[in-house]
Length: 427
Image (cartoon, rainbow, N blue to C red; front, side, top):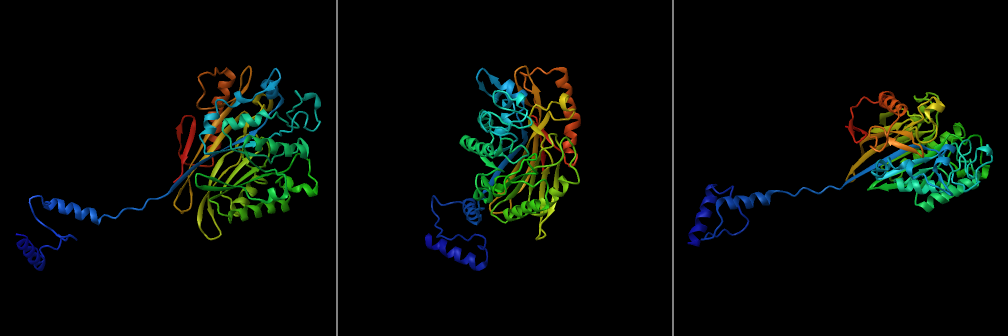
């Protein structure tokens, strides 16, 4: 019987009738032999190639604006013989914690009791001070860490409010708390070293600069201690551009520049200081730029960048992140200093391909004054426990109707809302 089957298969092959039934093994028919459908299934399985698995990396980066502690906050945070700023951040903490890496701009010093310059001594409180020379209790660092922050930027116009000793102690306290920290440095070697942070497989090179330090200057031999622009001196600006350009040549996916610059209380970026600096940073290799110092929110913008090799890339700038926390209440300033944001970006990278910006999102915030604390509220997701007054309701309505449209005014894309966060998906 087996011989007969073998002869028949040979004959069918010669006649071309078995061309689509080739099986690379001896076919033996018997009582338990596979049917024609089974043979075809084997053929199909053997012809399918296994698709290679791709490595996908995803990361979310978030940043907030100026973190300031005025005298009003010191008074409210003090209970008997200790300070605690935790209530300030309790409602916004989930938005910070949701990021893979969260950045804050620390616009105060941690110089210890009485470490600040002795200006307006009559306004000191429990040996600490707000404006004009900021010096806050060490517990602030712990409160910020528990809120979910990972990196503190320390180059701003108040960096020398507690002199060089306060600058150095601020670095010490932040590092003891487990923070990454850039903008101010202990040594020339620390100042020269690039800060590169890998987050979920995506590498960010980050720089931090301030325009100046409120008229205070370092000795020439200590110039490395602060990355600053010498009050917009051309030589200092070129040095910043050079550093950014060299950082872009490192093994990084994105170059992030954080700037303390601009004109206070202006809601639009100016064409004399901010815009030229932004353009220059993009031209020298920056991909993302975060701005602070004006104390009010300014628009974000998505730009098409043409690199030196002609390649097109996407750049993002938020001209001013506004205040995250301060006592600069609208009723005192007449400006929108009570609004801020948690500004975030989603990144993706597949295998060794160039990483991309997938989405931009931000949570608008409002500083609410309760009887005992100043608290940062997500403007579109007010906690049920908060009983807003008429004034607070008016301010939040104003924020939704005026401030948010201003933030979006440089970008014509649509957004979706999720639990108080505006999300812009980039194509």
